[in-house]
Image (cartoon, rainbow, N blue to C red; front, side, top):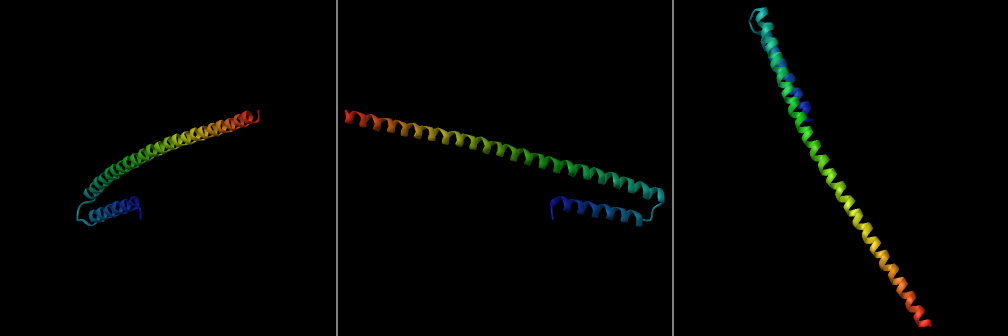
Length: 110
């Protein structure tokens, strides 16, 4: 079970317990309604705080993943450029070798 579901279950259980406790308390109706309103307000504040905390954590993790991915992409581009340069260098060396061997053959035949 995800931490979000656990948190929702805990908050729902706390809210249900608070409401039942208030409803079964021997108070006047107006006092009971006032207590329910206060508990509801407290619970709403708690939910908002937890939501804000989770949103911050998710945002931080997203930013970290984005930064890491950006670094990997940059590293991949650099590796690609290095491979292209190495291939060009080898191709130029082979071209030079072919030219040199042709020049040697021509000088031997003359």
